[in-house]
Length: 170
Image (tube, rainbow, N blue to C red; front, side):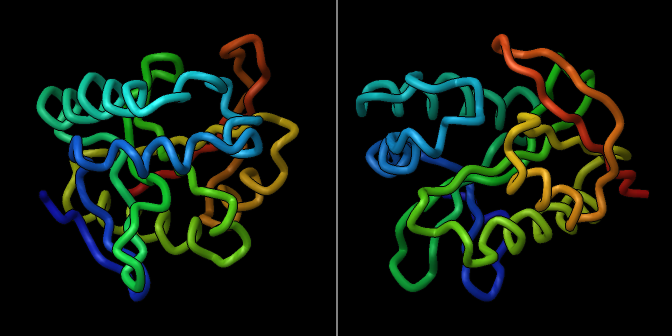
């Protein structure tokens, strides 16, 4: 297990196959995937294992980064993900986050994303990052703006319209 960084409340680390039940836990609630465009992709533990193995672990090896597990220090439970992925649809590096609803409204998404941005500035060869949110997802758009990102364009993905935000790291 590779720890990427820590914040006062969180450990942000690479995913491992043993996290499959937690990945399922934070993806199952309908309100979590309502605005992601990938609802129903993680419905059983085998789906979660497949995502970990065929997406995140593969990207750690091939690209050097991917979404990371966000672990709440007080419980040592994976409560969601945060981090980056190389995203061909926007031709850039996307900052993304997803958390179980039990952890919404507590500043965790902001804490995790701010820490990831600082990590990228210091340790990654990335000049610009992007964040996307469905136009209807006001809470996520608010977080992206709060991070200092600015709106650049709309794009279509999964038959939905997404707002794309951008931030220069250098």
